[in-house]
Every structure is written in structure tokens, then in C-alpha cells.
Length: 359
Image (cartoon, rainbow, N blue to C red; front, side, top):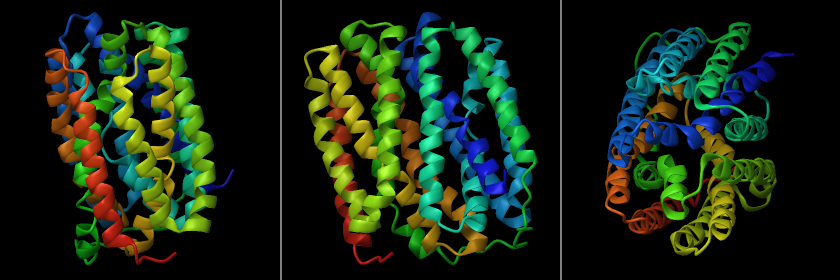
């Protein structure tokens, strides 16, 4: 197994953690008698802290070599997952951050020959692992799930340890790509809108239709499986339409479904709309990542990618508190309408800024 495949496997298997946590964390906290308002605030702190951590680690990775900081990132995440398993609730704030995603993406960009295709494979495999994570509530209780997450984090760390890195670091801080990064400012609208509802979706299903974790789990499994298939097709769609049009067209269709979702009358109909919306909104993510890497110089890729993530993550961090407050007040519709409006505005601005970018 060469370095590219080890990198893909190391980063993709963390999808188990993401898929499981998407379903169980809010429900687990609810079972401990924490309010939706508290849950939203905890998610806010988690996203805010992880965004700052990730940005710092990406700068250090560009300066001194990315692998060592990716390893440190994975190691710290494993420690805090273990603490969360031990019922230190506030450990969740530090579980999912530390910037390994941007660091590993930059290492992959150095090693991959066809970046779009590699990112598509990575994203698809990540999603397939997240399906496994989403299915865990069918078989395991909360404690068993978090212990399994710890084992996954350790395995991911071990795989990354075997990868060879040729890039040794630039040794100085520069950001000549700042004007390019500035064009991604509309991502702040996407981040805020996503933060309003996405971390709280399992909670929304629970409050709206009074379903359990075992009812919700198959929905998230179907969502991730559908997305995995769509992601594989995204690179082919990009070949036909171009990167920018692929991103814009899929987003517009997803936004239309987002406006429909809060008005669906039954759990089944809401599940179908959610699955389709998730696939359309996220299927172009490898294309987006390839677009970013193609526009950024090699020695700035980690911090530029992380800075673009920060543009998304900072507003995303504050939004769950607002979403949690609205849910707490019994308003289960308004967050979706706000998110849809923000997504649509961001997509139009993005198209106008990047429509002349060629492959």
C-alpha cells in the first residue's frame, strides 16, 4: 500500500467518528438531561475551538512539516474522545479539531497525480465509513460507541505514522494567496447557515417526529450511502460542466429541497428529502477542494486551506447556539428558512467570483 492510499485510509476512517457523533452526541447529551440550548452552546464551543486549533496547526505544518502536526492532531483527538467516553462532557469541545484535515489534504496534494479523482475517492471512502458510524446506534449503546471511536482514532494515528513526507516546511510565514482566499468569503454564509441546523439534525428529527436514535440511524446511513455514490459521479460531472458550474448547480438543487424539508408532514418524507438534499449539497466537495488546491501555491496550501475553513467555521461556531435556542422555543421551521436564504446568497456570489476559472 503506497503513501496515497495510506493517507486516504487514515483520514477516511475518521468518518466512523463523524457518522456516529452526528447521530448520537446530541441525543446522548439529551439523555443526560442537558437542554437543547446547552447542546447548541457546546457545539458552538466545539466548532469555535477546533477552528482556531486547526488554523494554528496548519500554519505550523506549512512552516515545519505537516506530518508531525497531523500526528499530534490525531493523538490529541484520541485523548479527548477517551475523556468524553469517561463522561467528561466538556471534552467534546476538543474532540474533533486540531486541523488534521487541512494538513493531510496538503500532503495528498503533493503526492497525488489526479487531485480531483483522489479527493473523490477519499471523500467517498470517508462517507462509507461514516455509514458504519451512523449504523452503530443499532447495535451499541452510547458508551460502547465512544470507546470504538477511540480505537478508530488510534488506528488512524498508526496508519499516518507510516507515511513518508518529502515536504519539510517553508520556514517563514507568507500568504501571497490572500487575494484568492478573500474570494472565498461567501463561505461564511454557508458556515453560519449550516451551523444553524446540521449539528442539531438528529435533535430536530427527535423533536419534530418523536423518533428514537434507532429510528434516525438508518436515515443517516442512507444519506451517507447516497452521498458516497454522488461524490464518485462529481468528478465526471466536473469534466463535463467545469468545477464552478458543478458546485453551483448541485447547490441550487439542494437549497430548493432545504426549503421543503421543514414542511414535510411525515418522518418518512422528511427522511427522503433530507437524504437527497445532503447528497446534492455535498457531492461537489472534492471538486471544491481541488479548486482550492489548484489556486494556492504549494508552500501555502495547509494554512490557506485552513483559513478558508476558518471563514466557514467561525460563523458556523456561533450558529448552533441560535439554532438550539430556536429549537428550545419550539420553532422548528425558521432555522431552515434562514439557512436556505444564506446558502442561496453565497452560491450566487460564489458563481460571480469564480465563473471565469478554468480547469
